Image (cartoon, rainbow over all chains, first blue to last red; front, side):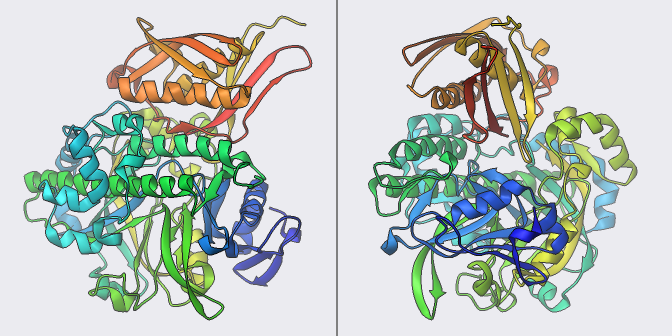
Length: 476
Length: 142
């Protein structure tokens, strides 16, 4: 991205002043090198978002922003329904509520090393991963609607989880206002056999060990110590979310003109929040959030089963579960007054600062855990929401590394088998149904997540707490 | 018009992948774009084409029709747990009727690299090139 188009506010804040149809500025939070490495399309997309009706504050881009669909991936934008604000299917994305949850295991690195291969195999055989893999759970119509209304709480009622899991999930594991009736029969059909499956692409389940602790006080509140072993799950709402995204994007493209919305890009298709279509999407998208929460809850249960067979000493306790493709109704302060806004986070994580009432009491003093996934060979990070993040971008932070290279280039550069062997030599076991899939997700095809996390910390989006490195990676 | 054999190819997108089909007719370009999408998942020669699935979509705008067509295939792939290796498409007055031929996914045999989440409107283009060929392309989210 050409830095001459941007006004430098400070070392990690870059602004595009409103021009043309932009109603608000576009603000990029990133270091100079991250911003200059961003594609020109990210600039264009962030500016396009700033043109949408009812946008409040600015169109924000996180340090890991990259070229997305209408919205940049790593885009945050809030809309006020009272000012004609809109909701956008592209602003949420296809994989509704895709997210990360991290569990403490209570065992040491050595304990894992002793059974690493058996554990990798047990996890791989227990948790379906990749295209064409279906779970053992099949939902009939009634169960499907109950799942879409109940999220992780529904999963718990079915015996998949522990009661104490719920308070460690955003929305206590159940997104209110979900409307299963707004979800099409096609979307439900796509999900029928996909509960408790990991999916493919950049989705994974990893056993990781804590290599560094940067903030001892917050780490203690989170219960993290150097050398601890954690389990992280990255996946979303599977076929259901994808189908909801596809269908509503199409409807929003078709209806934009009727709502008097001129779209700078078709993919920015949106509808007024208060319109029938906007409300229907909101209800369907919330059902999609519940689907993702239920899915991660079932995978957690399966992971616990796999651990109990191989390493019964382990006790998998949920640290936290974050979503990074959502639109949520939240109260924020705008020029001194509290307002209800609909905050889109497309490839961005909510990051409430210390004291926020939505953070579980045990963690509240430290800020909300923000879980940042790296690529399979590199580290991932645990961060915490900061006081300042509210002023920066409606309490939002980055979500991952972002790709540095296309899938095509990655497969030209690496072979899956060779990568698996190289990672094995470094003590990282990969289990995946597809060697080409592994090559497409090669660690070198991603940006260095460390730079992204450092920028998020420096920009006041989220505080760096700890770093983890994979020991086992199950890849879809 | 120069007659070039229909073909497909992929093009780069930062996070995902672009599918491009080129042919003498709009229908051929759509067939090729669909082959490009199948090839995102697994090499086409891996897919047996014993089972046929009929597909129909409607739309006056050829670009919207391309996205509908690819998304109809994504849906059939997901709900039938199939991969398709051959397509026959006819387009008349905004109505697309097609047969997709393929087989049930066999993870050992196909080693599917990724699952397609959906076809998007990003870099979406359906057009006739100066040499009279039809080109149909868009980015698919994986």
